[in-house]
Length: 189
Image (cartoon, rainbow, N blue to C red):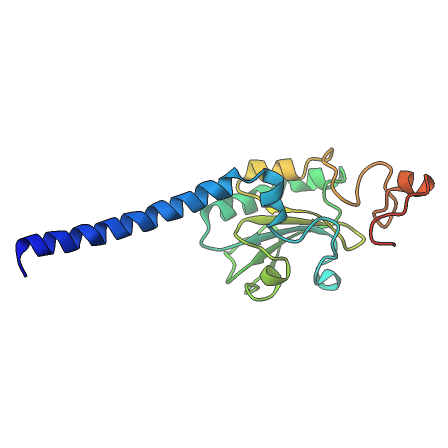
C-alpha cells in the first residue's frame, strides 16, 4: 500500500469519526433546546401519580444516589440539616437514601441498597442524584434531578407548591376550591 493510499484511507476514517462527533453534538444541542418543562416531564414519574412501593417507603423525601457519584455524597451530607425544613411542611416524612448498589458508610438517612432494578426502575430515575417527594396520601409531589445541595434546598422550599399540596388543597390532594365551584378534580370523571 502506497503512502498516498494510506493517507487517503486515514483521511476518510477521520472524516467519519468527526461526522459522528458532530451528530452527537447536534443531538445534545437539540435536547438543550427543549423547554425545561418538556425535559422535566421526561424525568421520573409525573407529579400526582401514585408512588410505587408506598407501603414499604411511606411519605417523605426519597434520594436516589450512587456510591461512586461525587455530587451524590454532597447531596446526602446536606440532608442532615433538613430536620428544620421538615417541621415547616416541605417534607412530610423521613429522608430515605436509595442506592443503586452498595451504600457508603455513615449515612445520615435511612438507607436502601442494591435497588438499580427495583426502585430505580419503578420511579424511572434517569441519573443520580435524583429527588422524589412523596406526600402522606401516597402521591408524588415532585420528582427532579438534585444536582447539588443548593438544588435540593430549592426543591424543598416550603413555598413551592406542586400537585396535591398547598393552600386550598384537600386531604387527598384535591383542590377544594375547584370542588366547591362544581369542577371535578382530574381523574374522577
